[in-house]
Picture 1 (cartoon, rainbow, N blue to C red):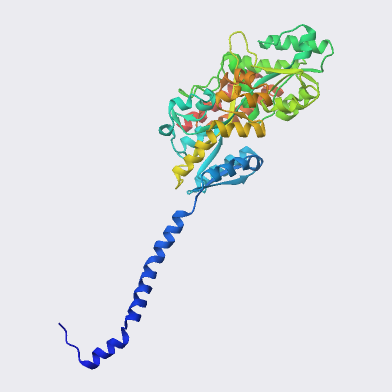
Picture 2 (cartoon, one colour):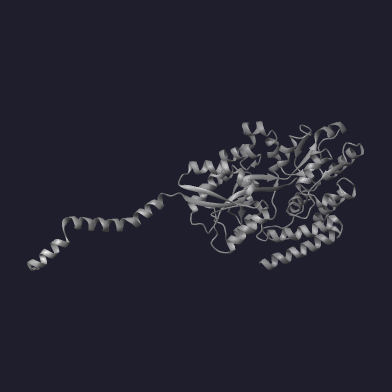
Length: 436
């Protein structure tokens, strides 16, 4: 034991009174506990999950986002608004991933982005998170459009598909059933034009943009032709049936069934022609039904699967949007909670009732409340089940650009269909070979 002199003991007693010792321990405890308190507070804060979505749809999704945040207080879903041009949104996602640490935990994807993003390694594989039994509840085209090389990278949220709109009143008066083949479509159109029912018979999207590629995959399917086989990467654009498909489109203008300006039309100009009673037939997407039902032709039109040639089958270009998880996210489990919420039947029903967008769950097409508001849904299910995908390849954007350029040249007359499709096929093969 250490013996201290009396004056030293007195000095230490003055310094280390009981009160001061207590204060010292309190101070030390406070210093130690501050970091622990900070960690505890942070752990109680909700995890923020971010996703980039076009501004218009971001507004439409606000009620869904608010409901999610109420139901999942430990997660804060935050939508970052983007331009309404889908190409610009794709570019923003691409730039974010290329720069490294993307600020987005989720990716809200058009169906044709999936193979590109998956091939680049920007998406998490969701295959182990969802059973086949659950996937069977969705439209086949929506599920297949979310896959790349057999793995699932995108869960469906809302669907889309191309179809034929037609004037039921005019066909009934002229004594015709709706056309099943392309030749019947031309014949009925010319008859209705000759009898002064309408100025034009058939309108479609011929402008040089993605809608041209979407429309053309339906015509290819109708002629038993193909664009690119995703398994073998074989290109079929220069095959006889594909060239015949281009000749059909060109013939609609040569025969006066389609207006010359159809080569500049996107979805909206064609919709207005149909709604204004200036054409008997229209190729377009489901959104037209709701708008036309509130116009002067309400009750005088219907929808059906696209016509086809005798050797082909009807095809509806599969469109739609869904959710994927960014591979770079630090919050994969929170992100998956959002994906599950958006894919729920209750969520999709609520969104469909509010916006008129087509759900991706099959059972909702016969939901009584939805059918009461959108009577065409059971009929639409029959149409959209004939889904045909644009080629799910990593180089889709470049391949579509090639097709658009040469198909536009063919239908506008600056190249023959045979010349254009041979050039398109050659350039597409070069693209795919280089990409390998």
